[in-house]
Each structure stands twice: as structure tokens, then as C-alpha cells.
Length: 72
Image 1: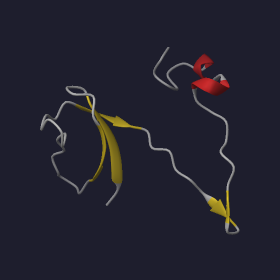
Image 2: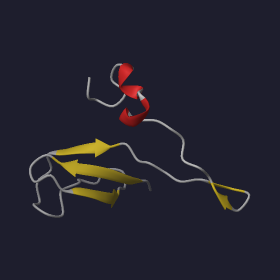
Image 3: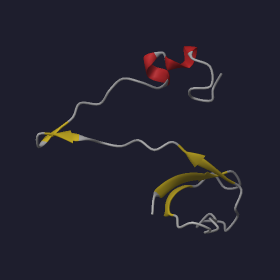
Image 4: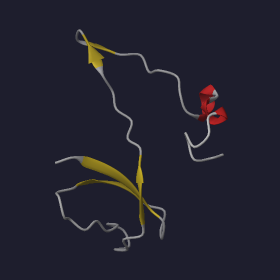
């Protein structure tokens, strides 16, 4: 069962939800289901050490690529 991240379009709340097949997802703050699924960011460890974050997103010039971050 995956954990998804959501943003509520009604109240602006961000939350995570463990989702099973067929589950209806609603905002825990306002109860509405007008949600946008967000892209998750994860952390990886290699050989017992914390991996350095890779560049990406708007701060690294990725917005030149159409539809990567949704801002263009």
C-alpha cells in the first residue's frame, strides 16, 4: 500500500495518506475531496551514509523544460 501526498484545493492543507485500492481520499482538515496528488521527494542512503541531494526543480533551472514543475 503506497503512501501518497496530497494538497487540498479547498483549504490548502498538505497531507499524506496510506491508500488502499478503492479508497476514497478526503482532506483531514476540511473533509473535501478536491485534491491534487503531489510528487513525493525521497531520501536514499548508500553504504550507511546519507546521500547528497541532487539538483533539480525550479532552483536548478528545470523550468526550461515544459511541464516539469507545472509553472510554465
